[in-house]
Each structure stands twice: as structure tokens, then as C-alpha cells.
Image (tube, rainbow, N blue to C red):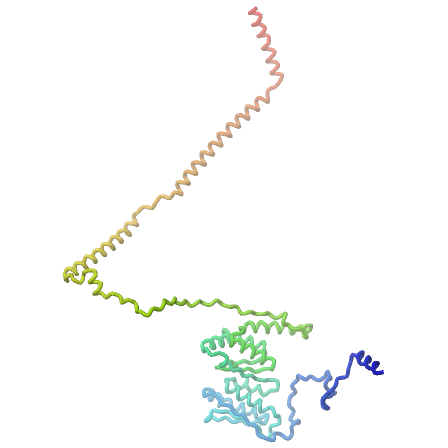
Amino acid sequence: MDAEVGVGDISNPKKQKKHKGKHDKPKPWDEDPNIDRWKVEKFDPSWNEGGMLEVSSFSTLFPQYREKYLQEVWPMVKTALKEFGVACELNLVEGSMTVSTTRQTKDPYIIVKARDLIKLLSRSVPAPQAIKILNDDMQCDIIKIGSLIRNKERFVKRRERLLGPNLSTLKAIEILTGCYILVQGNTVAAMGSFKGLKQVRRVVEDCIKNVLHPVYHIKILLMKRELAKNPALANENWDRFLPKFKKKNVQQKKVKTKEKKPYTPFPPPQPPSQMDLQLESGEYFLSEKKKSERKWKEKMEKQAEKTAEKKKKREAAFVPPKENNATNEAGSSNANENSEVAAMAKSLKRKAKEFRNNQADRDVRAESYLANADQARPKKKKLLSKSD
């Protein structure tokens, strides 16, 4: 019996799952196809009628250049937060913004959204755009790029690369990811869905770290958007369709290094001074008159050399150019060609004459030839008779 039971267990393909804890049991809504677990439902105040038991607050500092703008838009921010039961305060003395819950606050997560709101306002995001963060389907991410690279010049270049000419690259990334992006100082503020924020962070970090250019990321995102339209490829891996970009090693200029001379403990010999040179040439012992005469002679010699060079240059313009050998060769070649043509014409005339003579011989008739023969014979007989 035990053996039969064992065989039955092996043959049964669908085994019941074992649950370890008493709470780890199948729920009636686990396999319900009508439930969308990724959908973010809007908060209903009836879910938390009692409100918050404790006061939660967050504060953040803002730069001085944002003070005037925040004073202008603060009433708008205050009314937006009042709808959710959140109090806010702008402290111009300390340069800070504070948000806190009140008795009217029902949503426990709205204080985190309010914290993100004041963070975005302090990072130069416009107030109408920053207020959108209070919606449930909108999230934000602040990417710190200042610490990713040390060299300031490279950092500025790569940040400009992220923006592109006339902000075209940044606009393309915003359209493809569906996020709002603001590059300000050492941070990049982004607002959108979780999926879009993940893509934006990858693009920004790869650009600043010089891993991949933003243009290549844009090409990949375009391909993914086209592949998403095909329902047949929804559950397949897209790596075989996506382009793969390899980094090319650009040849850098080699730094010229000077060859090191062999080390010697002795210093190089001291170059001779002007007085030593005069002593060697004997000029030192000459009088001032003779020195001036020598200088004058040297000057006149140099002047004569220069005048001779200038005269040669002037006379070079009047020298006739040499006759070109090509013209002589062309004349001789033409004479040869004329002689060849004359010889060819002479030979053709001779051949034509021969041809005419041959044609006349062919036209001779046999009758005429025989008649001439008959007339010639009697004459020959007469001669014979006379001799007899």
C-alpha cells in the first residue's frame, strides 16, 4: 500500500504548495484578474477620519537669489498645500522653508510630498511645475552630479553635453521619458513616473561619468518605444533588437619626452668670454683705429655681397627662356608623318597601275589573237620561198 501511494504522488503533476506560517495562505484576491496591483489609487479622506496623532515637519534652506521669487509665489504654494491640510512657513531671516502637518491632515504620505515640493522650489524649479508633485502619480528625483567627477572643466563640458545645442538633447530626453528635467548647478531635478525617473538617472549618470553619450541613450529609447507598440514582443527580451555601442579608443597625442643625458658629477665647461675670443684672434692688442678699419672692411664686404645678389635678381628677369625641346620633337614627328604619308601614296599609285595592266591582259579576245596568227604565217612562208 505504501508503494502504491508513493507512485500516485509522483504521477500527480499538480502538488499542493506547503505554507510555512499560518498567515502565508492563499488569499481570495491573489488571483483576481480584475485587480491592478500597479495602479495608484487616489487617497480617500474617509480612510483616515481621525487624522494625524503627531505633528510631522520638514524644513530646507534655499539660496539667496531665490528669495524674491519665493516671496512672489508663496501665496500660491500656501493655497495648494492648504487643500491637503498642510501648513507651510517661509522664513526670510534664516533662509528656510518649513512644512508641517495639522489637525486637518488626513493623508499620511502628503507630508513627504510637501517635503519634495520645498526641495524642488529651493532648486530653481518653477512653482507651477513644483506644485504638480502633490499629485499621487507624480514623483521626483534629485540627482547629485557634482561629486561624480573631480575636474571642473570636464564636469562643465559633460553637463553641456547633457543639455545639447539649444537644449535639444534635454528636450528629446524629456519627450522620450515623459519627465520634467532641470539641470541647475551641481544637481539635476527630475519629475515624472518611477519608470521615467529611472531612465533619466541612468542617462544623466552615464553622461557625467563618460560611459555613454546621451544621443546613444536617445536612440535606444526610440527603439524601445517602437518595440513596445508590438504586442507580440511584450514578453520577449529586447536585447537582440537594441543597438550596442562600443567605445572607440581615440589616439591621443604622444608627449615628446627629452632624452636624459648621462649623469656626470662635473659641471659643463664654461663658454669663452668675448675678451678670450679677442685674445685668440689678436684683436685685443690692436689699436682703436685699426679696429674701426677692420669693422669698416667687414661692413663693406657684406654690402658688396648684398649688392651682387640684388644685381643677379634684377638681371634674371632679362635672361631669355630656354627653347622647349617638346616643340622640336613635335616638328620632327610631323615631318616623319608627312614622309610616311607620301611613301604610302606612291605605293598605292604603283599598285593601281599594275592592277590596270593586269585587267587589260584579261580583256584580250581569243578570236583576234587567232586572226593575227593567221595573217602572220603566210609572210613567214614568203620569206622562205625567196631564200629558196
